Length: 173
Image (cartoon, rainbow, N blue to C red; front, top):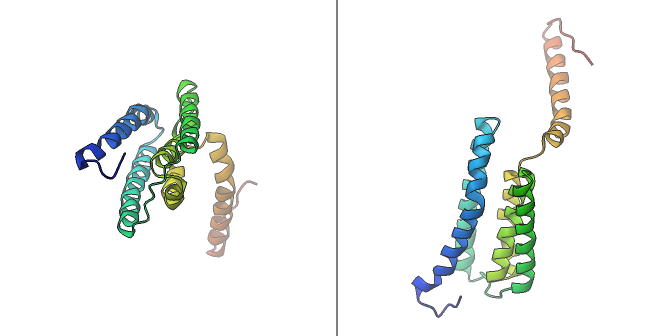
């Protein structure tokens, strides 16, 4: 990649990168939609993807306009990050572990950005990568552990509220 290249040639590496990402993650998304427990899971994933893509576009655009989009490639560090992400993806895909499969999106994208633009630019895009954390499905046991205190608190608040309005209410503890 060189800024002196013709514009149509500068897009060629990105077309290959996008094709590679599509080859990896489109089958995963298709499988996830087939195996989703509810339509809410699918809508949530599509919302996070759309929001992340929009935020990435806006962030890159603002960095380009400000002239702070780096051109200091970190090929070795980015390559290691990309290799880690691809191994994570391979493990998740082969063992049917969606947490690993979709969790690999973050190191894969981070590695690609670092390879082309360096770690400084990657640091400026941290919020986009953080947003992608919400794409990763939690194992049911972890989700249950996280939501259990919330369920108990809602139950206690409901009991207190209904009791305050004079309804005879009790709950099992």
